[in-house]
Image 1 (cartoon, rainbow, N blue to C red):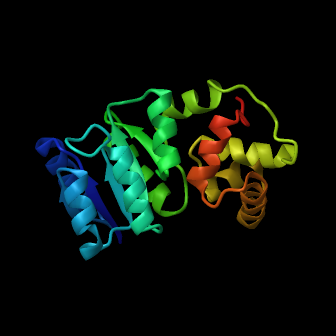
Image 2 (tube, one colour):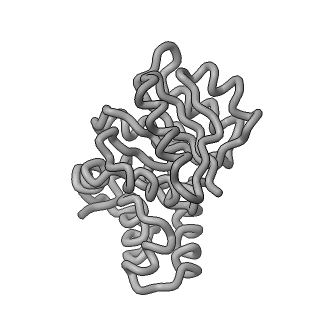
Length: 207
């Protein structure tokens, strides 16, 4: 069972998301919050696996909320769900610790799939966000990263899970884990969100 907390100021959207999640086998909505302040205060009481986080919130921004929640609860995966799709906000959200980034017109089935991908270690993104992340930044190879590691990093930036990367590159999941471990060490990062953020900032990936 994947438990999901929702941080969304629009009550109708918040309730619709909760109904979708609770109405789907294998998922449960653990909590809903209308702002980051209440989420930060209460979220530890009913620890979720994944947090769906809006960015444009009253009071504290979603990006600052991501940063604080990740500091308190580093094992919780935070998936951005917002109307904002510009590169600056994507980069800031990933740097703050978000594991993925979806826009609000994402179909319900894809949203549920993305929650599962985040839970399983992926970095899900809406297709237009993934294209922007990868295609907007031309390649500047890191001197220590091998060609195969660059391929793995590109797939990670496209939002693929370890299993999906393994299938796309015709290698085992264990080989993917080994490559990603090496990427983390070479880029001096410790999580998939940091690796994706650094790949964007330093232009390490291309289409």
